[in-house]
Image 1 (tube, rainbow, N blue to C red):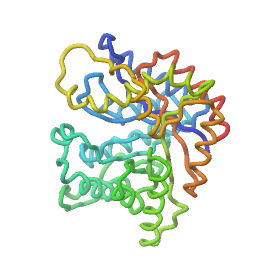
Image 2 (tube, helix red, strand yellow; image 1 turned 30 degrees about the horizontal axis):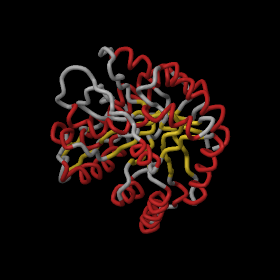
Image 3 (cartoon, rainbow, N blue to C red; image 1 turned 45 degrees about the vertical axis):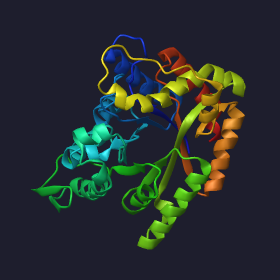
Length: 339
């Protein structure tokens, strides 16, 4: 089923000069590397106002990724739907689909940051309704026929959205809550999850029940699971090598609200303590021998009872480019052929 790679975010490393040109150059080079190594997909991720430049413009970057590649699927993991105007989003996605010759998968999510929702969107209270309406609007916008929409969040006059994609754009929903899963089962083509096994199994149950209720064949639904993967000779060596990089990635989410108005240099995460390492170990991440990673992923697929496509969330943005490509090489050689 292949192995995807991501989540590309073009973030700067702590202590470096603010050279975002280099950050985006590396992001595009890594996309080319991913295609060369045989990864089935490359995924981006969206946030705003973060001091290290966490990628805000996924479809702009996706167009550049598409222009530099020819076969790899390009996925957004995820566009924060309530932060976007639905017609503008439809136009941008259609443009990427044309540039990529049909390789875009549009992943959408609700978002969770109050400052992002205050700056761009309808606010925390209405983000679910906004996303549902967005899922109704987008297929109509891409149909080639004029559309009109009068909803609680969006009121659109009768317009024809151009250009029209030559190939249908697949939509997947990211998240973990029951409402997000059921929304995906009703309106989307799949679900993009990073949940632990028990939670993923429950998500499959929710989606299956929703699809049965509306008469949809569950075999038409796509399941994608993303998680940090770091193959190493043994568990201790893996955590010694990658632990601080993984911790910085996860810590940055807690730092986002503060960093939205921070001035000056970009700080590093605190040092990873044994207690914090134990907390990370309890999340959906696989750091250790490649055989163990393969067994864990295979077991997850078997327990879920559905075909799951895996995405290695192994873009650790504090790694330098050479170390990042070495990690990709190991994933391609040691994990990809077996999942």
